[in-house]
Amino acid sequence: MKRFLMAATLFFIILVLAIIFTSCNKSKQEAVATNQETQVQKPALKKELTKEEKEVLQTILQHALVMQMQNQTKRDQARRSLYAQDYTYTGPDGRFFTKNELLTRQKNNRLKVRTVEIKNVQVQTYGQTAVANYQAKVVGSQRGLPYTSLKTSVTSVLVKQDGKWQIVTDHLTLASS
Image 1 (cartoon, one colour):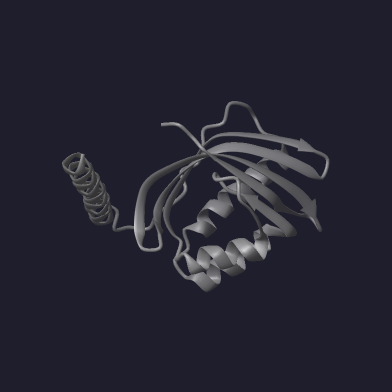
Image 2 (cartoon, one colour; image 1 turned 60 degrees about the horizontal axis):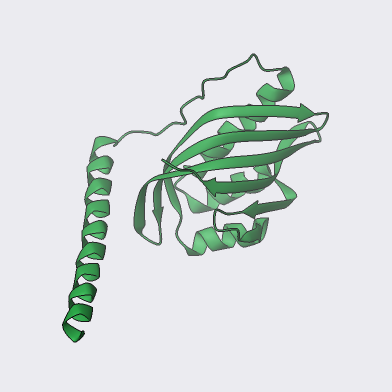
């Protein structure tokens, strides 16, 4: 029984090391391949958008661009202006954060987003309120560990305040491949 447990433990250690090595290797290859300014890929839309829906879409795309900013201070300032005062975030793990909690947590975890690809956008407006559903594929790192393709389904609720659309809440769910 001891041999089995030792063999199983050794197997899992080798498996974890192989996964880490593969992730780091892919990240280095991707970094070499994309040594240029990253941009958000404009999503293909299924219908003609109204003026309000276009403004909401522009806010979502602006949010994706801001997330790619490498200067932490400027990124946080830009995000604070995109998020409503009472912004909330629910992550893929179901954890809930206020705006300040989220920004502090991501700063402490050294979140770095290299690219964001937005697709399958659906926007619905209800007067001064809008709901945007879309898929986002994110490449970056957290705590120094790379992630090469985090795929999420996102629901964002926005409110138009003082002529400007702001994100009130985001809810992310991990999407299947």
